[in-house]
Image (cartoon, rainbow, N blue to C red; front, side, top):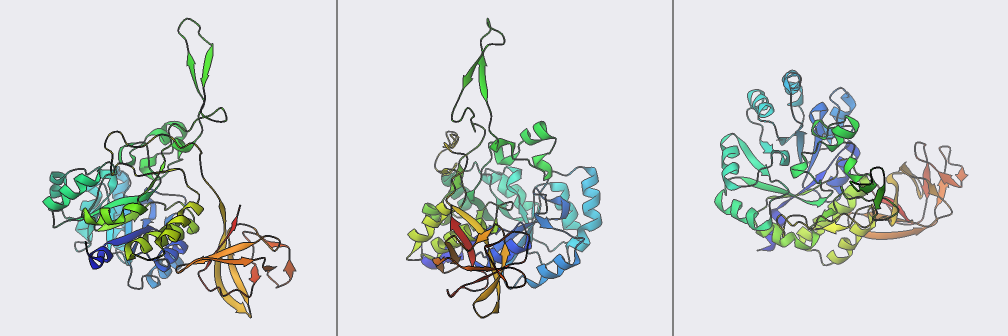
Length: 404
């Protein structure tokens, strides 16, 4: 596989918000995906709000030659299709390069109103074989986001059999215990349906299990994993950073990172690492190591090398955390003074670091923290206006963090 062929493979990153959209473009994504209004599988503000003129104007300005895909991928009922029909013309004015769709009825509505808009089949449709790919191609889909259950060998076979369709696959991030994410656990426990964009992530909760013997009703024998609870329903996190060459060689046109609901810091670190891997950067080992500095579960290669016996054992720890995301540098307002989009408290008493697309890590040490009137204070907090003063060579878009 040539280096040039490798570089033509698209890196697709999550953009659950406009802030994250700007970040993933800056940190190396070729394309980003974001939810569209109420029709996405991710709610809670992690989508474009069609009622916000400010958001619409910002997203039109932020394209800058990169691609943007809109997720219209929830499970549709009759009223949902009616609402989509009402809003599709307005949605069509946004600078999307394709829509990610799982429901064929929704695809039909989009095709009727926006006949030239490319359609990408969502992983929710569980496409796992070349014959299905051909059917979806004939229905007008130009790209198939394969089910997570498809292994590397079968990706290669599908690509060789159907070369006129682009193939995309998730290569990093959280995985679901349900086939292609079609889970009803959240709906059963909280009446929030994962298939309607309201997942409560109940598979990540801690559960207590016990055995009750038939002849001794009410006498329970506990089954423990750690701290009297288990995360048996929770999968390890997918990480294919070591196998980028194999993924591209198998025929994938796009490598997709999961995480529309995760932090800007997560989006930056993961996008940067996979960008460097695709580019064959000489410091890839250092960028790969940065993935350990983002909150995550233990890693797995998912279904890519295993079939039914996926390495899906629950992680030993719920999350592995070593760094705290503090915020993003916005602009230089005075000499060596920078405004900050604060996400967690920044203290003048603790050492902090900065990262950037081509700066693996830049120790800042202790910085001077300033309040909204530029008075020196001990710390600045999320939700308030604040600044830092430092002699370090930072710039707009740098991300700040500290060792926990």
